[in-house]
Length: 113
Picture 1: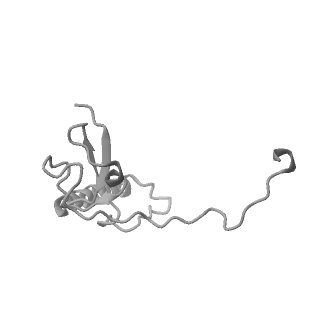
Picture 2: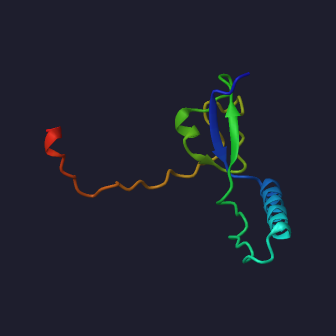
């Protein structure tokens, strides 16, 4: 079936371990082919649970509610469990706080009025 809804969840410990191993292998490969006459590549910290998400998909029969699809779910989320649809069994992460781009209204140009 064609996916109709996509949402994100945090990885399980096994999925996170796999992501860390892949990232470490990528870094080792970059170091192996790095130009010795140039400064060595600089890497940030290895991925953590807060850096990685896993995509989940649902067809029309197995789709969660749109407001639940907008947030990141926990690693133990069972969605799309047909017994729980259109909900899930976890408490999703809250949406990040939004900040306005401008705190004061900007004047419109004269030709726009």
